[in-house]
Structure formats: structure tokens, C-alpha cells
Length: 259
Image (cartoon, rainbow, N blue to C red; front, side, top):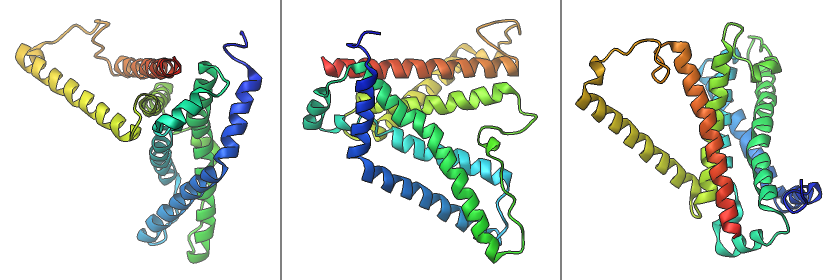
């Protein structure tokens, strides 16, 4: 690949610059994430008569913490776009649009999906062993494999659907940050809410007007999957396809700002 498009040296410099300039913020954000997890887990355990958390609690809180904090963090991607002055400085950095896009993608999505679950797993166990002092009930540690595994009987399609949903949610927040200058996360959520409301309202009106509720299409129709497995597969495909589209839009928006 031409150095005008991608250079590994320039890509490394982007990481070095980011972690030098944002070291304090990253440390504070990590501390806040860890602190909130410990406090919430402790409050829930106290409310449950000091009953230690089990695997079901572990996975429920995992989804909640990673989703909420992930969207909050990804929703502030491209922070230089928040003001005109910082945008100009950012666009003047000697790096190609592809390098800047991949850097934000790695730092905001890839590292989040890697570090947030691991940090949660560590805090979950620290909190569990800490509360062993206050209760006679033993804390049972959770194997790290359950960070990505639900149950032995869960089909692969469910994992794919979950992964697609998480990636799509993060890509929406990521793309919103590239498009909106002020309050990108709020505007992104508002835009998604409007689109969902419009789509649902449109479907309800069309279904009511055309009487689609009384229509029974044949089961072999490809565009209308009635089988549960086929329906889940269609939704999964739509989520991954939507993620690709969102990321493409974000990249094009970055290139548009470069021009």
C-alpha cells in the first residue's frame, strides 16, 4: 500500500501522540469505570443479603456495563471535531484519512471491546473476594471464557446476533461522532430514535391499511423469513451489513472534512 495512503510509522505516531496527550484522561476514565462497577456490584450484593454474585449476575452486569460505557466512550470519537480550531489542527496532522480513521476505529471500538470486559472481570473478582470477609457464603470465581461464552446449549447464531447488535450500536455512536460537531452522542441517539419511530409507525400504518396481518405468505419465501432460525439469520446479516455501512459513512465524512 502506498505511503500516501497508509504508513505504519505515521500510524504508530498517532498512537503515541494520543496516549501522551490523553494519559490523565484515560486514567481517570479507567478509574471511574472500575469504581462504578465495584460500587454497583457491592450495592446489589448488600441488597441481596450479601449473597455472592453468580455466573448469571456476572453475564448480566457484563452486558450492561460494557454496552453503556462502550457507547459513552465511542460516542465521543473524533474529539477534535468538537470545535473549529481543534478540527483545523487535527486535519493538519501529517497522516492520511485512512490512518486517522483506522486509529479512531482501533482506539474507540477495538480496544473498548478488548479492555472493558477484561477490566470488568478483574473488578468482579476483586469485589467478590473482598465481600467474602463479610459473609460465610463462598464466592465462586467465574472462568474468563464466560466473557465471550453464554452457555453450552446456546447456538452459534445467537452469539453472532449478539456480536452484530453490539457492533452496530457502537458503529452508530462512532458515525454520529464523525457527523455531528456538538453533542454527538445525544444527537446520534435522537436521530436513531426518530428513525425507529418513523419506521415502526410506517410499518404499522402500511400493515393496517393493506391488511397484511391477514396475509399468510408461503414459508419458502426468501424475503419474508418465517422460520425462527432464518429470521435470526436475516437480522444478524442486517446488523453486520448496517455496521459496514455506518463505518463507511464515517470514513467518507472524515474524507469530506479533509477536503
